[in-house]
Image (cartoon, rainbow, N blue to C red; front, side, top):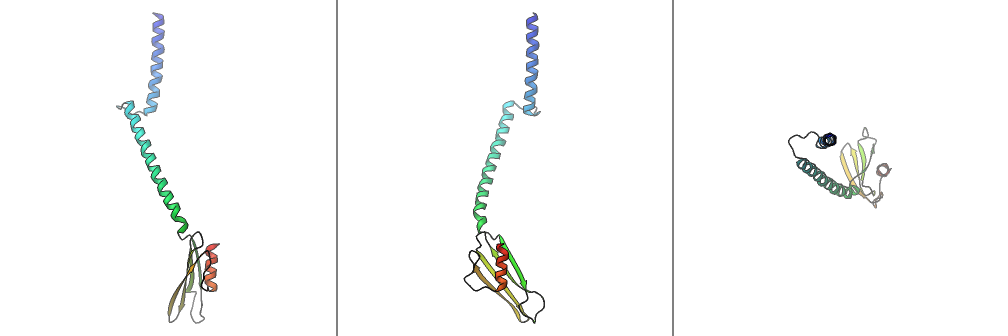
Length: 142
């Protein structure tokens, strides 16, 4: 009889410990079966995995686009004519990671404003560049 009482007390303690561990795993989800809770957790894990795959695909797409996006910008303002006030003319260089892009110049005078654009490949242009355009490209590539 004593052996049975000791065995029952031992089993009761083990059952109590298992119950506490189960409550820790289920985090107090009352009224749900253990299988239901595990299924809900697995659904969350699969959803996170799907989201991660989507984010990975989007990241790869962006990484493919980034080198061709304008990343380097140089802006030089200047006064090309003595009869106008202020530095209202400018040279703007916009280049990608490889130094390809364009440089745009604006010449402002009393009679009007003119715009010019020149292609830039690897930081150089096959068209003659003004000092200001060259400075804008240097600024963009440094």
